[in-house]
Image (cartoon, rainbow, N blue to C red):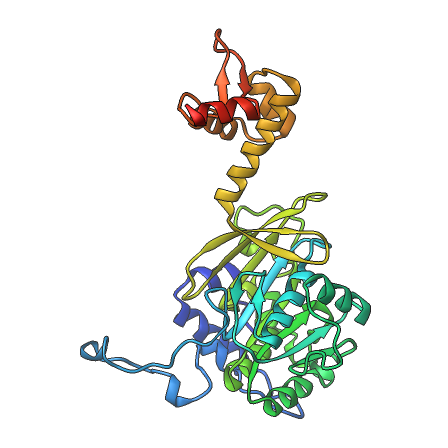
Length: 371
């Protein structure tokens, strides 16, 4: 059986890639037991009513199409989503917040309002005490009612060992189904079947996640799978997922949590089909994450605070020494200093020999404002 290069699958025309993958899959005998329609490979949604095989140009603006369903508006929509991040950075904390917000109709990250709906959380690594601690930290009351729309499975079977049946039964029993979380994917996904020996890693991963994606599209809910990043460097963060790139290629939404060790602030980067790219600044304490605004604006404000604090402690310093001490790129420091000096509301000043920089004291800043 001829292999199919992963790069071609991503970069080539999507219809051609889908046709090539489907051609390979058609050669695989149907598995025993439940057979799931693998329509994600041709981008076919769950019914003819919401799938347009062709559109006449004259109907381009007038033809009616279903409204997009969102688990979290402008962040995670119906279908497959992937959350990437290095180990022990707070991915489970993030999805716990999302699960509880949707189950109660609250606010994700204490900012984004979500509609109430049923949530299934396949959690393979935490305990109930972990979830309780996070819920308390997020401000949820310890009541007897709990979270009626939330179901947590700590020991769910693998994908081919009853896992798909579990998901289907949950979805069919919850008319208000909205979100399935798989944390992490590696403990849920099935292994290669004997009849899949001819598939390369990309094709196998695409087939595996395609089964989950198909069910989500068929029954109308969002799936968010948690996946570790590869340690191998890659300039494109979307391709940093461990293993093949099939997972992020198949996903409609890709989210990355990026945080430096021993730091409390992080960046949440979001991209996908039909989603405006965005980078959110979030701040966490291990049990919660909070939205802090646009990442670039937040990072700039934090850098200003750091530079100001350093100069008030150490006195005047050269631009080079400031950058090296704070481990901030020199051009970033230079831009901040020049942008925030020489004006009425400045907080930085340059020495008379123009070789060093200093920061005004709080009293000096106030006096300048009064003037």
